[in-house]
Length: 216
Image 1: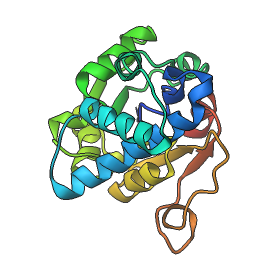
Image 2: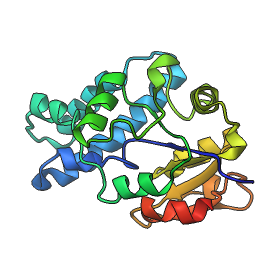
Image 3: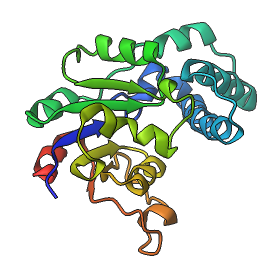
Image 4: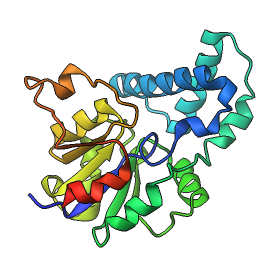
């Protein structure tokens, strides 16, 4: 089926979440990210939504306590408004023209606006969609439904791109064509990759600039 539109996850896919943390705190950054994602799942299951800015701060403080490190929490949180895009992002988006492009992210509107502006990507996306409109988090189906609704293009004709195996599985379960951008050479997991799991990606890439060729 042809790809008529592309929807991108933001953090880890377009924007490098580890770019906001100094290299000497890389272990902290990994734990921070792990807890950030984990807390979105927990809050979604408990139906106790707070926006991603609040979740990110909760995760930051939890990671610092777990590792017993002192971090400048306020400075790191402000840095989250300006994460660096991966080097190939601009060229990858250009190569996907004239398809409409969108971001669909856990990020709060303020966070996404900051990241897009910092990386000079204004005007590159037809829509920048935040789960804040649904008051829950990925991989809830109602979140993934925001893409086709905004674009006016069925999920089956839209390529969803994420660097997260768990999210790529969620997007596939919803009905998107899926490209897993496996930047770090992960093995994936059974739900996603095993033939019996049923949520295999249509494509696997290591960089976003491979997607235009994969999408046809």
